Amino acid sequence: MFSGSIPALVTPFRNGSFDEASYRDLVEWQISEGSAGLVPCGTTGESATMPKDEHFEVVRVCVDQAKGRVPVIAGAGSNDTAVAIANCKAAKEAGADAVLMVPPYYNRPSQEGIFRHFEAVQAQCDLPIMLYNVPGRTVTDIQPATMARLVKAFPGKFPAVKDATGNLTRVSEQRAGCGADFIQLSGNDETALAFNAMGGVGCISVTANVAPKLCAEFQAAIAAGDYPKALEYQDKLFPLHLAMFTDASPGPVKYALGKVRPGFPQELRLPMTPAGEASRTAVDAALAHAGLI
Image 1: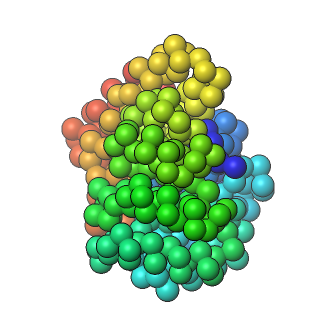
Image 2: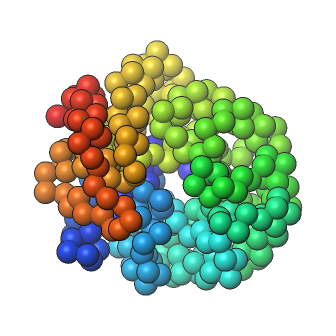
């Protein structure tokens, strides 16, 4: 269902508004370079500063441009259960194949609260729900036991997780609790090689925005069991993985896109700001190391 290199797409803005033409070009480039899926309106897509109508217009454009060639997994999380349910419905109307959903942030619910949130969402969501565990941003952590409880209680509703905990032991814990068929995707580029060796099948990637072909080939090498080749890609891409977070994301990513796709808009929405000088220097060096500039 979901595997390989799946970019968490940036959202291009120009003069404060969504730049549809640039986005369509980005989607087309991603597919032509081998990306196996697309995630519009996630964290890297600046969803936190997008009004609902704009958010799902971006999803609609992504779906329209993809034309069924790869799955589209729309960001749809909220710390309000009712809003998360409404987002699922809007994602379906926009044509998405699945939704990507963080647990409630800021509220800091208990594990029981996390379970009840997703229980309520799945009851009114007609799309597969990919769990997105990123406690570094949400503060809330879907513990492996809670994840297993959800997967077992609602067969088929929670087929996958984007795991951005950075805790590699989770891969084995979740495999044991949720079953070998549960799809685990790394949410961290720099540890994706180890993550996949332990049972993961891909990565929802920031770096793939900038280096889609290399990231796709890296994932293909892992899937083929060619770990020496995968390690070559890891060595080539590792500085870029780190450079993407040398300043608040997606500042460095948009700067990098401007280097590999001249003319791509680098505009961000406050409170996000452009990458600073040290970050730009790191990005330039990493792009050169990867052979992208």
